[in-house]
Image 1 (cartoon, rainbow, N blue to C red):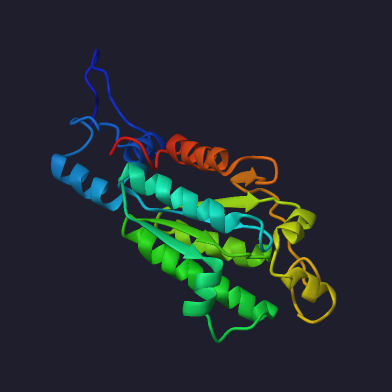
Image 2: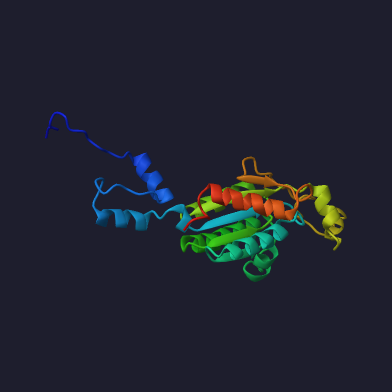
Length: 228
């Protein structure tokens, strides 16, 4: 088949099509049939209609739980999608109560959090998780689990260990330092600091409100919140 002289051909590359699907931009009627467009949009909804997970990681008493709770309030006020909060200590008591603190048990705990987060994300909801999650491999696996269904943002709550110890009024860190508690992250168990988090924050230097604002700006920049 030959194109007559003087006629111009139109086309959209695969990259451009994916961009339009991701952002919800218009796909020209000449590109494909309306029925095909409808199928493409249902299978590839724009980010503003996809779910996402905010995964906060840091030492115990880093302030991650406080950030998570404040972020949930902020997202609920916007009312764009239901928000599920998975606090580390709550998950430990309700979902992983039989697990200890060996590396295997810690990894299994994170895998369970990732599974729940993935299911909520798949349904278009928002998840805020705040486990300690000390091991990089488990965090990477959590990202792979969730990103099948929507967005995943790793936020490193980089409060220095000394500050976390100071924030602990229960004396738990002191017990760990005396050897009364074994396998405590930061004392006799390692914390593998994220090398390339999506965002790094430090509550010892920034107010919680500013940190929440930074996370919201990240979500807006990536197209997950805003116009729907």
